[in-house]
Amino acid sequence: MSWLCPKCETENPDRLKVCEVCDSPREISPVDELKEKLKEKYSDAAYKSFIRYHYELLESADKGYASAQAQYRVAEWFNRGGSSGSSNDYIKIAVSWYQKAAMKGHIDAQLKLASCYEEGRGVPKIKEEALKWYKKAANVGNVIAWNKYLRLKYNNKTYESVIKYKFDLLSAADKGERNSQYLLGEWFSNHKSKSEYREEAVVWYTKAANNGHGGAMYKLGKCYEIGFGVYTNLDEAFKWYKKSANSGNKSACMIIAQSYLYGWQKKNVDEAIKWYEKAGNDISGTDLRNIGHAYDVGDGVTQNKIKAAEYYRRAADKGDMVAQYHLGVCFENGDGVNGNKKTAIYWYEKAASQGHEQAKAALSRLNSRVVKIHFNSDWIWYFIFGMMETVGFIYYTNEPQYSWIHYRLVSLFTTELWVETGAVILIAGAWLMSLVKGGPLLTLLYGCFAFGFYLNQPENSWLHREILSLSVSKHTNVVFEWGTTLLAVGTWLVCLIDDD
Image (cartoon, rainbow, N blue to C red):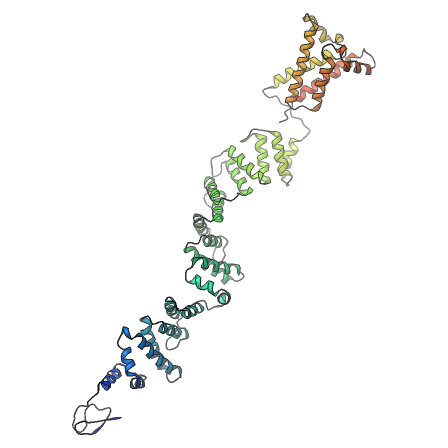
């Protein structure tokens, strides 16, 4: 190209600034002056053609903030040129203009810039930069940018199925929606065959837990407790269980209660009971029994036999055989309850029916044929009533005139009727005492026999006459005397046997 000198009309090469004949300066039009300025600023050879044909666009792009669209168009021109394979320099220039437009908030420029970083076109391949620019475009509502962001961020085998089947859930979770984060954690937890899935479950549980999701806190505590996707850490587990419990999670409340009861934390039965109450669920028989045991021996709480028996009973009612056995011991020994052998046997039988060996041994001991006789505070009264009953039987055995005791008693009093009536009253008293003590059926039969046989004078008793008619001789009175005496003594012994 050349230019014509306006003074001497000499044609000069384009590269000269003054006429080579008259040294007159070259006259430059505003357009040419603009092009020259742009050429000086953008001296890269790649700009030569662009300045020639698109200098106005370049001028607009060069003006600053208001030129974001122009900058994007310049980038697009160079990007197309680079895409056609004409020059890799074009791609680099395109990236620089995308960068300028993207910094000014141009969404399409942000998308293109992210794509360049993702693919490594015109810049090094940097995933983090690509994610940054996709996220910026997504944050203003660009759906395409959001999809590209998620697919790039979770572009690995672990998330193949998630992208395919749970894309919307992943989208919500990544945006910080805590319930979606928890559900995504559950999805990975349910596909726990792969270790990387377990790790991702912990990642999403942690995000949801940090966002205040009580269920996620509980699951995160469980992960740390059993080493699911993380190393086992009981202190960390308890921390998340406690947070979940404080958020109202009933299962976590139960875990905290058991931690204090079984010594995961410092054993504190009162604290355990408080958390059981917060849990609001029925306490298991095992837990109730262990609370009872703690009160029984004073482990982690002040010893209290009454409360021990109370919790043993609650556990026993739920069918816990160990608690049933311990409750039997309480009733046998009178620990925290009124001693009662019959009730003790009842609970021993309950436990033994479930295979409790100690309960079986206790039953064998209590049901043995060795009768244990001991005198309690009322023994003297049983003795007196028993003797009275014995006297009554001997007095009225066979014909009263042959009874030495009858003869002696009558000699002391003026009327025989008074003595007879008194004796009957004594017999009635002994009979009633036997019944109160729970004596056998024979006690009742003996009492009825005495009443009917010897009411007033025996010769007027039908039973007396019938029994005498069965004897070999009316002179066998000693047989009646001694036989009836033995029966009376047996009844008296029944009164003494402790059958509680």
